[in-house]
Amino acid sequence: MMVAYPVLKRSSVVKEHEFDDVRYTMALLLAMGKCKGVTLRELTGLLEMDQHDMGGLIDDAACNHSLPFPNAVSDMLARFGSQMGEISVPSYELMESEAEIPSLLVGLVSFNSERSESTALYDLVEDGTLDWLESDDFKSLPVPLNQVAGEWLASR
Image (cartoon, rainbow, N blue to C red; front, side):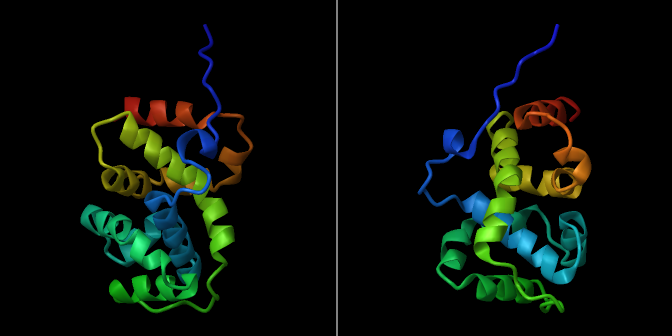
């Protein structure tokens, strides 16, 4: 028997105008990765980020959001002992759009497990799941995000 999964939209999880620390952190991480020319998984290795660092980024999201986005990206790279790459920082609007699906998955995994958002974010980055969401393989599949979250949790 086929199980039907509802298709989640951001508005069903986050009010449209509410600031979301995880979504902002995800946008920041994606921009940092683009500036360094690496995937999220490679970024955490390159910058030697751990779960505690992810929690710090989420905790600091509102403060970082008060800065112009390129400054926040530059400051976070500097915090981890790295400099900007050759690429200029993509716009916040573009990065926020790209961060929508990954941040929803982080929220789903955190909500449906005993993991904090920072643990869920770190685990999903470390095993390559969030990089897979950016792939053409994922984008070509009609797979609802909550099915991905359910299968990811079931395999742990």
